[in-house]
Length: 412
Image 1 (cartoon, rainbow, N blue to C red):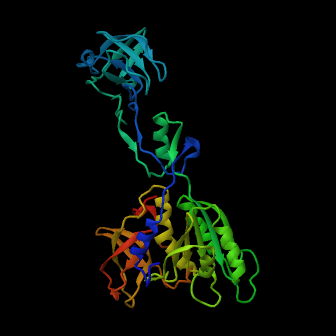
Image 2 (image 1 turned 120 degrees about the vertical axis):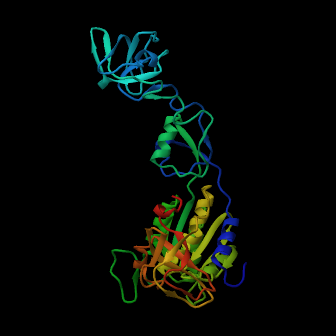
Image 3 (image 1 turned 30 degrees about the vertical axis):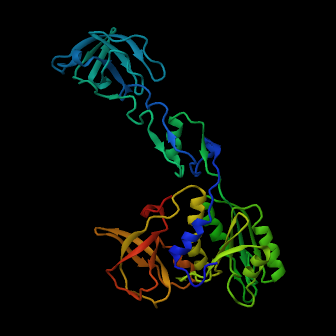
């Protein structure tokens, strides 16, 4: 097990080194929203598959209407109609036009479309009052996607646009990474479920809610969530259930060295292999990571902000790696808008709200940064990561940030 307090990047490296992505599975398109692609998707045919009209009007030969205008219209014989899904049966010859609908196949011989508003039709003929150069109002085959193009890459999270593109390629299903199965266990005698009256000294359990929500938002299936009192045997029993048949187990609280912290001894008794304990990070110092058989086990601090921050910095990358996504979000920089002082020795993950200005992103701490101040996460868009040896950041200096929200560049 790594000894001493680890920097967060080293801890993340060790976590990712323990991840083995699962084999992808077929998923029907109508069940694939939010899933992550487990294959590269290429186009077997162009989209659109044929030249078609961008307007309701008349398919013509450009040379026949090259000099048409309102003062000197060109009259053409209408020989057929091309409708969406029902192409014309005839091809065009000189002096002819074919009525055409938006999206309908361009008939052979036609190379332009005259919009209906630039025409008048009567008695089987159409009067064209505007020239239409070759290609006018024509959507070419492959304008959207060319045959052979790689359209979507493995590791892409599927949203509405991605599903629409897959449908346009004719795919009824797609290979997706299985959703990681995850359990949440929260330790502490003081915990009461929301909705229950609080005895003296008790607090409502928020970690089950926040960690479960974060996990689901990162593509995991939360199969089990439980609390356990500070009792050695109860802790061992609860851990045995928490690690059963899951890819990831997240335990909050009870992982430190106090007289009533039983998580680490219980994990040892179950045969867990520790990888590290202790981060050079505030909030998040008492963090444990290891494996039990094939299950990744995270022992996060019990303080609610610490639990959320360490989940974002360590568990989220593990889930992304299990899904075949890029594990680490992009590190950006932002101008700090307020002085921030800290002692040397531990990095600080400062909850910040982010705004965009002409000179780039600006970061401002959300307020008091205590690990118990859960409301500080309400307005947080990113974590400003201040290195262990940093003692002060002055307003106007640039700092490294890790986005929490997709709109500032974090992968979805």
